[in-house]
Length: 110
Image (cartoon, rainbow, N blue to C red):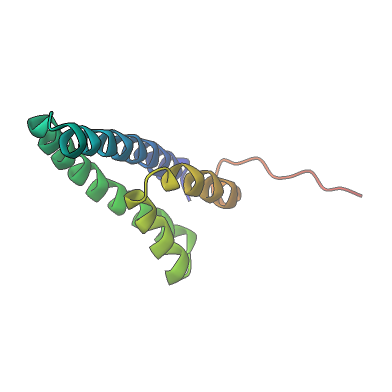
């Protein structure tokens, strides 16, 4: 697997997670304080587009890493749960880094 597959997943995981937190803050402002309706709409649309890109990149990574369906589903859904993508991204990187073509092999312990 190429390292670019993992890199673009990582970038979109962070971007999607940050945008979801921004969207949550906008929703609090809109429904809690009655301000920022237009901003909430714009952020929700942007997050939706970015989430679709995240889904494509996560699915691409999962298919190349040959994940089982349950794991793939969890990674795909993590973009909809605030802060979950941060934790899932770390776990995914730790598990898939050895599959990357340019990764250094672990030294053999005697």
